[in-house]
Image (tube, one colour):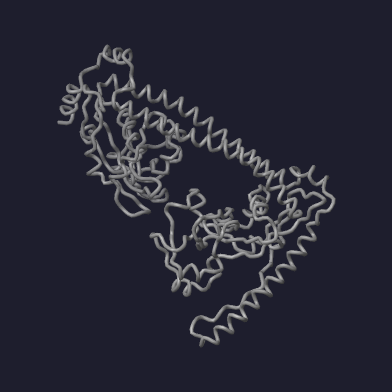
Length: 525
């Protein structure tokens, strides 16, 4: 609860001037009435603390527009359009002297997706901006959003009715200074945690590198006397593939016979195809291979490489598969489930008919999934879920029946394999990778017995790494919670101690908030 000697006032009362921005025209536009300016966008907000607008765009705007919109020290920029599901609108930044030092060659304005807020001239802009930032990180601006999922707009008329705490001017300054001091200490702690995360990532890569160069199982190999060679394993895989195909062919023949006996009422069973093992051979592998191992390509060790579209044409898929947000027979596994590490919320479902129809892309756990569009080349390991699951359209699934799926998964996460995968990815805006590229990736292969040992060695080390990482993430969560707690105390009037408050009262411009409010109203007349 806010201190009794403070008051709350409407947002709009604190500003003497408010205007939308102007995106203007491109630099090649020629008109004597236009002038080159720096235009600050929402894109600059993300790294504002470090960059203070350095990446602002150069644009041309009409001089009479510039006269109304030229930024000054103390202005606040409010994002009113351009947000999305993961980034609501309502972010703010404060224009201070460092912005003008970074953008000294031209005058500065903001884009039309932002609004320029100029506080009453004797008010503390930092106080207002800090409170608006508090509202944003506390999630309180979400209620003022409108628009579609992909483009959110701030309902400014409603937003300007929010109430902002008003404290005596010396207290505003003291609170802002203390918040900045506490945030600086907090940011140092966060930076140390982030550095620790970076070191863990380096360690993780080092573990995988050593594992797939045979270092972690060197002593184990010395003790083995009767381990099959990887070359023998490759021959065994070929034999098993042939047997598997012959079995599938027999099952198909039986299914066709049954289909004919039932009057050919439904769709004819599709003849199984021989596993495609075609590969590219235009990439020279860079990793070390122990003499007891062999080099092969992904195509040599997998039993299947499938995707959503393996089940039929776009037309047939559209007729048989409908996605739903409501719980149903099975979930469609998407890359977002892995990126958010969440298989419980924000799920897409299919009914029983669709699940059975998508027989070639059903998931049971243990499959290696690879992004094919957008997050092309990103590798995931499918967990075992307590629910039916099927593959969404932007992923490939690799099945490995005769080698360890974890062995292949961890190797595809190794630096050298990631580098080769990125070599095959095509496109920039919406990158893609195809099946032949996935099959072409080179790997080291050892016996199944050693694969088991390698996975064991990796997971022993990475489990320690994961525990440390979990503690770091908890620390980061606590830091963000502490940030909100500091701001909450600040704007309830509980951040300054008695000595600090007494010092504020001795300053020449201290006056009760009622008198400050009267002064604001008089200034705006």
